[in-house]
Image (spheres, one colour):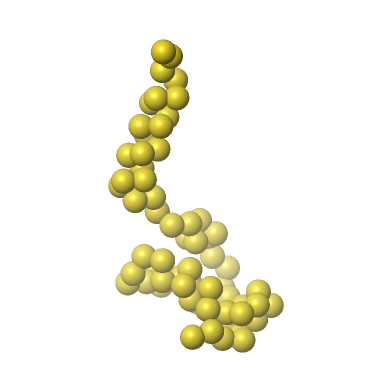
Length: 67
């Protein structure tokens, strides 16, 4: 489902990770998107999974090693 316009409220926590991003992506144009109140943009960043975090830590650790 896609929408031409939507008014979203991001004050309440959602029950599933990424639900906010999905709701935003359903609006066809940025001009059709309205938020009811200001919000912290960090809320739109998805949390890094444990596997991705472990990979990043491994990469960082190996990057400084010399052969």
